Image 1: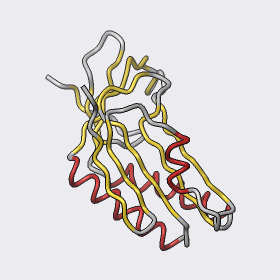
Image 2: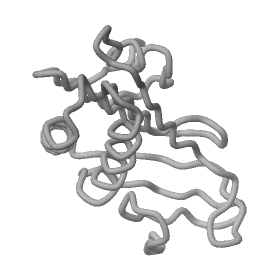
Image 3: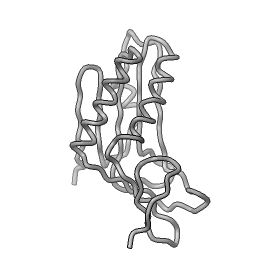
Length: 158
């Protein structure tokens, strides 16, 4: 069965939600430009622990249509603010095992400083605003759902 990818593309921005493995080269190619002197890529991966507990895997879910619009809004604003050539953001949904990517963000810019700043800002805005949630599956415990933000504990599922 083929996986479904929801995506939006407009004015030098590309955003997508997918259940497929993420491909760093593919997202870099989406932002590549002869006018760009820099491409910055951020890859967020599933780590093997959280707050000292061993993580088995993460599961992501989203309100897809709203999440895509929020992602697009973030990318458009950051593209304009930092005068980027292009920006792309892809978030993986479903189960993301240890060591695999759950998000890729790529930005291209004439100069590296703007690309660095824009990439970090895009990630922070995504974590703060995009309608994506994750379930942390710990070894030997029930899973915990939480907002997709670092350091904020979730609630146990009963």
